[in-house]
Length: 522
Image (tube, rainbow, N blue to C red; front, side, top):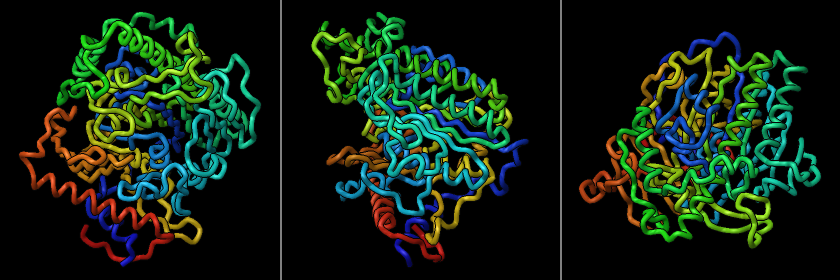
């Protein structure tokens, strides 16, 4: 049997069909708009308990649905690869395996069968547009986008030196440029052109904001909106966020996790450390506030064009908030105004601990704080319940197969001469539409040596070089109570399942083709 089929058999054995019959056709082929934030915490948005003003995201959630257990891959480039292909990043050579950290990763090239979503949707007559961050192998044009504004300089919100329009390098940006606004401007430009030139075509628009990824850069007037907002301290703000989550009917199974070092309790910080935290959070909040307002402009353009009601809008983040601390780009000039082009600040652990409330750890880690994302889906003509929650565990690998189903585009059988394997993700159409149960299936993570495996409500997770931990997420979403010692058999079996899946995926990622073989037990 093909080694590739071993992996596919493992997936097929545990991924039963979501429903027996395909969903009923929508009145018209829907448009798609994906809004992706970068390094945004699980509870930053107002509709997820945050104190940051996000009226447009809040309205999206009121008119659509919010997921409480949606997952990404803990890092920007593997999430983008998984989101736009329906495959785990390691499966398509876009992230490394712990047992071989030199294989693939950021420089990995996808197999020829791992086509991007825009290329697949074009087969269904879609026009395709991209604006913002890329971080996928190849170019947007090679990936199937008709029009693209690509911001490749992620160290400068005010004066990027490396950005391109439809593959052609642009001059360095003028002083009035701000990345979040520019990304929205280009998306709106493409949508206006679409309405004027090809109004009968459905569209797929991928808006990949860089906010609130470091450096913490924001217009001075935006930062001023949050002056003093974070002076009351981490502990109080985290408790308030958790209470709001509970009030919204979300995360009743979570308590506040302990601060992840080097984050500490507010009382343990010096006055200088408190001031530094408050300043960073003011700029972080301003960046999200501005992103929300730019999202509002994009939605207003769709409303003007008369296409908003039949547009499936998804909002999510590529990973949890970042606890990183570093300086790149133009450096951090002494005495620079925080948030200005001359500064280079990161949110760091104290801020990430608040942004990811109430979950543990942060970006790059596969504990819940690193991999949990807000996920809002709005589609007025297709979703019955407005403002509802969806508690089924879903993953970014589910997005591509779901959008293809909604578009009426079958999952490809071949890419050129290469057979295409089934997606690692599943179609969650009926979860979005009707809140139907989702069959239990394994979810798998690996990044920078950190590993995790979820099956049902149980999760095995291990930090790089550390023993595995075991959590029952239905009663402990914040991973506060490690049950490994009391459940050694379950711990060992889940670790073994992770290893088997990892080995098969690694072997499969090396194979150029898929041969037809009967499925086998995992």
